[in-house]
Image (cartoon, rainbow, N blue to C red; front, top):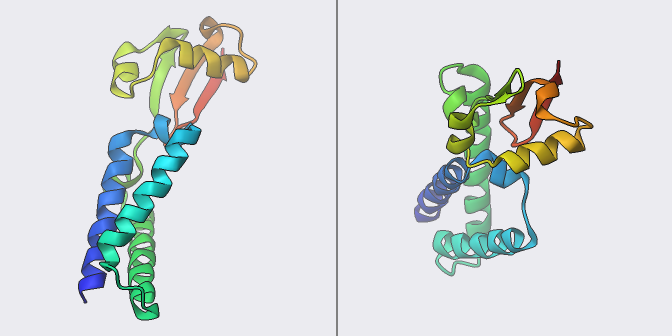
Length: 145
């Protein structure tokens, strides 16, 4: 039972960390970020299993995380009230060619990052954008004028 509780706590911790980090950072992982995730995974595993290398411990920890993920997915699907908390909401960052600074600051985005994404979407200038929306997956969607 101890492993199940530790796995549940680790899952909630990871869920919290990914929400705090922000959607933009998660969509653009650098090599160092990948290494950090691997190390973090190992540290969490040690905290969950406490050197229990048995198959039963593996099944309990893995099963607990899988059940929690399925439960969160079902909550997200069935509960409109919890969806913004669990998944986040899209955020408008450009409206009619004007950058919304408050939303940029909230998501820790720079103007140059938005301009780069616009260029990658074949948009020469933000003045040509009716809406730019930071989606819940960290990508930016552009709707031209």
